[in-house]
Image (cartoon, rainbow, N blue to C red; front, top):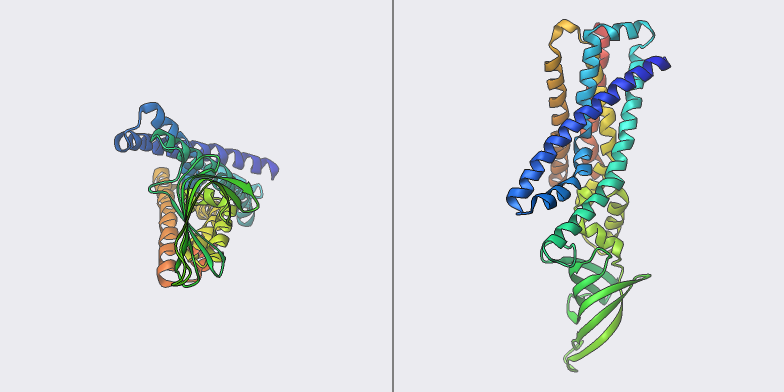
Length: 362
């Protein structure tokens, strides 16, 4: 059985690597053309930026590559009667399902590493290079970042950060302090800010305006070379804000959701993305379950190319249903775990049902 497992895994691994290379290469070519045509980058810069997208592209298409490769390998083994010999050697349906699930778990581990470590780091570096290419000092997109931080009942801070440098330093900072009735109490503007640790920032070149709490008193203005400012907005939270939720790691998403919840902000969309991130590696196992019935199709029931095409369409439909279920879950206010898990339950159940029916019939 170990010999059969090694042979099967070697065939699956080689086919998966080849299909993944083809898919990623095609997307790489299209991304380079898009960078050159829409963003006006030079060829070398466009090549560098698109190269940093490769981990995310591989993360996105790996499940479809796994399914396509598995269908190709299993249908090819069935056409050459090798799978029949394997069955006679002890590779029964349950054993075959367990072996393919094991290969799917290996691919799931690769997916998790890509999505949680490699792709987020590459996306941060890409954002930094794009900002440097535009002549900016930081990597915050558009007009900057807006962050809310509630320190207490009468200290609700709205922070606008014009730019964030690669080291986490703030530039062009505006802080608006509100009371519990949303009345403006104070504004603080600084040219830059450096994180000191334990929730403390040192702001430089500060202009502060304190408004009167009631009808009595006047406006107090001050200008300071430095000002120590306490806020729960750390460089780690800013790193999460620079990336889209799809590009964050599980830990970054969890930390960002905790920050939003602490400040009374909506978290359903980000919670849904967290669940999708947690479940996405399991898509490799689902793809292997979908591919296994192709091994039990007779060689005369269809050409190999048509079986591979059917496998690709199955993978694409899974990705589309996964996205559609997420959007419907937000609109219909489904529980976030249900919206994220529904495609896996549907396709996993359908794959097991079809596999059992096919094995019993043949």
